[in-house]
Image (cartoon, rainbow, N blue to C red; front, side, top):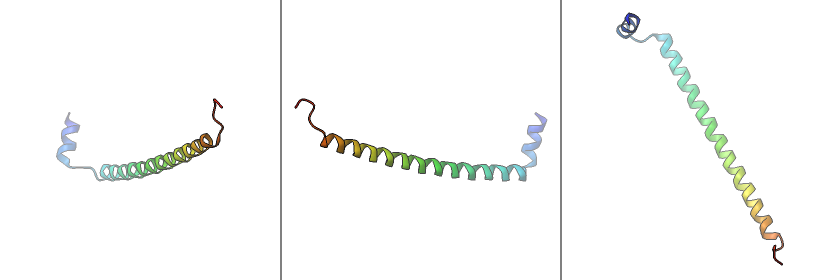
Length: 64
């Protein structure tokens, strides 16, 4: 408890603030990567769906 009070009264530690800043920046970078990967994945699914629909359109009817 005394350590918590001392840390609270002593103000923020510069090294801790720097680490938090670094981690926030890294999280932001990773979130941007995830968004980019999701966009690529959606694009790939759209291409695959378009190809599948084209194949369905060119195939012979099943009951013919």
